Image (cartoon, rainbow, N blue to C red; front, side, top):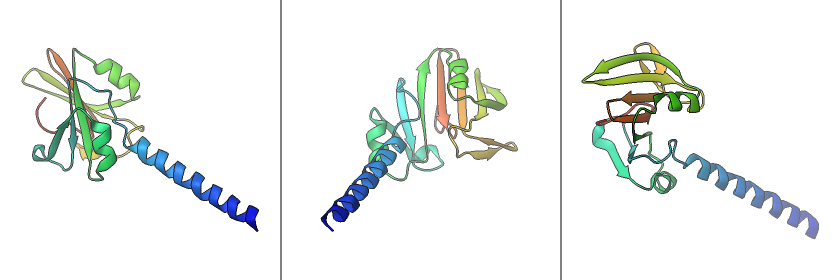
Amino acid sequence: MHFARLKIAGILLAAALAGGLLWTAQSSPVFEQGLSYELYTGTSSAEIIQTSAPALIKLLRTDIRGESTRYAGDRRAELLEKFSAKVCFTEEAAGVTNYYCYTPSLGHGMALNGHIVNLHIAVGEEYTAVGTPVIFGGY
């Protein structure tokens, strides 16, 4: 009887640890830290949290709906390769080329121009911004 209780306690402990690891993994930032990091709690630029500690905020909040960061230089090819992303369509405005992409590694997305998009890369003269599902706010 004592052994059965220990076995049950061990199973419960293992399940709790697995759940904790899953929760922590989901809290990891999608992108490596760039020049700035933003988390989105909604679908507009009014709902942006600028942070240097995205993992901590994602760990403590359940309302994060997207994230983005910005890097110096053109990092488009590197990001497409890293996420094994397919470019669905592009658009250009004010010297910035926007690549709207889909990658199975990010899962969720949003419908844009008849495509499901979950990775948005914006490349300008000096910077690359990247976000999921899209970049909200400026870039």
